[in-house]
Amino acid sequence: MAEQSSPDHEELPEWVKRLRHGGPIPLSDSSSRQGAAAECSWACLPGKLFHVRGADYERSKMKVAGGACLLQPLAVDFFQGPCKIASVMERPDCRVRAALADIAAAEAGGVPPFVWVFNYQLSTSANHSLVLYFVSSEPPPEGSMLQKFLDGDDAFRKARLKTLVRMPEAPRVVQALVGARWPACVVGNFLKCSYTRTEKYLEVDVDLGSSPLIGAAVHCTFGLARLVVVDLAFVLEGIYSDELPEEILGAFRLHKLDPSSALYIDDRCTSSSTSLPSSAASNVPPLPSVCVTSAADKPASQCLGGTGLKGGLLRLLGKKGQGGR
Image 1 (cartoon, rainbow, N blue to C red):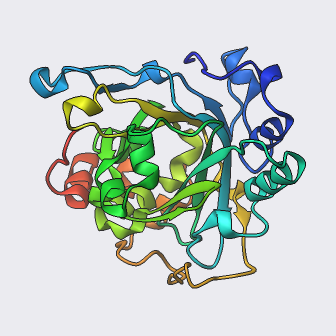
Image 2 (tube, helix red, strand yellow):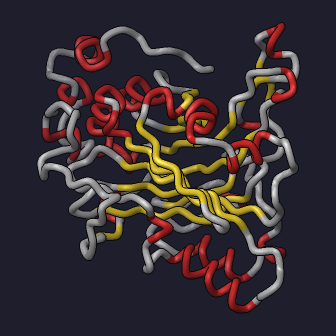
């Protein structure tokens, strides 16, 4: 089990503890003590587990182990509903939004925390959303990549937000469709992203169904989520020498998520939510039912078309995707 990265639990504010241990996917305390994380849970990760562009990357193209994360993991939410779920922090029933309101009322005049929200809209028939929250207690340094991303335009955000993916445990089909194909990805180059910036938070809504290829991969592997341990890190891509070495914003480990644990949201489909056909997200080609039901129903080869893993992968993915950046 990977070493965990988080401040001592006793040093955290009570509101952070409540958010971390609440919701459909709570923080797993056991992961840092006994080496066996609870299923359908998350854990903090150290940046050194990921590789980022080093200070000399322009010349050497070498990557180095990441350093300390800039943001603290705060919470994970898991939703489903009749519509694509967007603008999570604008919902009055959002538990993180409610916590920020309580802090503002109790600590008037203090420096409020700032929350970063990454809402992954999954291309499933039930419109699942996986929402990852980070928090910072201090404003970013002027001129830093963090400040440029917060205060810059959407074109800059689209070109710089990058995810790093590791899969310590996953079936071969998931490794082939997701882990091996997109170990590092500048999100805006492949997917439609929407950005909401306020004084209290930045939310990035990432529509995985906006790419037929990525949407199909998620659609096909979602039923195997109970068998997957995935590590996710967020990085702002450094291109020029004064932007290197890259720094990791924050990182999560998601441990064997249960799709049935997602909270159902059925009370509003706002203008920012796009209705989807009940069968599947648009742009996602139909796939055998085993892909979205149970991993134990049929072998992975049948999930990809019934004529072998290699043939199925070639049909679904075509040419091999771009490697890590």
